[in-house]
Length: 544
Image (tube, one colour):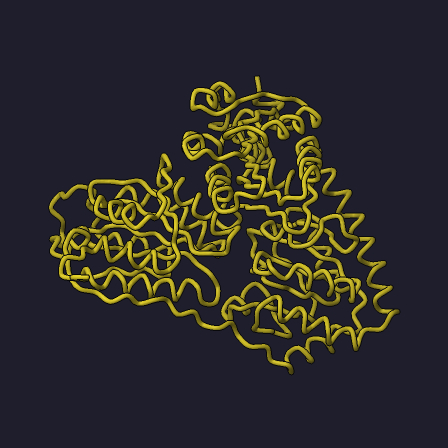
């Protein structure tokens, strides 16, 4: 190949193709046309969202279910900034999404001159959210940037990143060398650390396992350790599906319950596996922890955050949990395990009662989703939004099976995540069944992506739970003694809106009707919007 005629856009497509990237999410614009031309020429599929934030959420959903880097391509300025909210969500939830965007030309005046989409320092804006941002300085450096950036993204804790290519370099040609990414091995197990941790928790009669999304892939090991110890398992929202919600040891994804601090404070040992122990996952803060805290994580900085750790184990969740269980099996007495099971059973019963009480307005939703999951052996992926129906309802009420997934925007708590994340998840895992759940307020942030789902032929359900506005904020205002304001919304006819975009749209009432609608939707050719109303404190006030 005569690389003197290879453009920056061609170097990019070649590098992405060599890294196994087969799909990008993005919108063509004036400054990135050469990128899209070269992506198409390389056979890389292009998924067309209706907004760059939707593109980011689609990539995020795909990355969560595959664990692989997903790519978003935008044009300059407002497009890149539109995607930045989604990248913030990916960053706070440790999801590997790569943003590729043009930037101002190399010779652009420092104070600007009014160029189209001009941003004074776009890289600085991206760096305010991301730790890995690279701006290239020649066409040939594009390949190097891809290799270096993916090396960082695929090593250790996954996080999003960005590559900015000055718009003049996208069209300019020049030589370059392909630099394939190099992945750093995960930290090796230290046997003495396993031994010390096992000895510390061997005699525990009130052990508690707290598992996060970093434990995905280690579900069997986590369940086995819980059985050996008689320990209860508390899950973060994004860890649902790691273990069976119906198992005796699973207390649940109860990070929103007021009793959680009492539970963690009552434990005499906590084993934290692949979790940040973050306030966005475990709300009633601060989270009291016992003196004995065994923590398994691959991030040495996170190891020191949100907990005083007595026994740090810097290693992959699967290997470390298996090794800990093997050692524990030699040390654990039957009497200690029996005592722990009794303790776990008591807390499981208390948590179940609290989940039922808090989740009552969404009981039909959770019941229907649990029944729908069990109609087929294929995984069920629930793409959730930051709405009461999800964190008070589905997160605690839906009984996930091992292999199911709950994709929840925990860290940043962004609205409008559910639908586009579900689209990305379905494209990345076509064998899975996908249901997105959003509130009527959050749905309007990205409802246009329903048209993208129609165009892509994505078979999935979008359940919109309508309480007449921003229900949680309305309740918070009311709890403060304020008169709720700015929270009541005049919503559209959601089923009609879906039909106008080429999707199916229905309204249903009750668990049986919702289950029937989900079943019909799974046999449809494209997406189905299912509208339900919420019988809640907020709904009683705001629904006409």
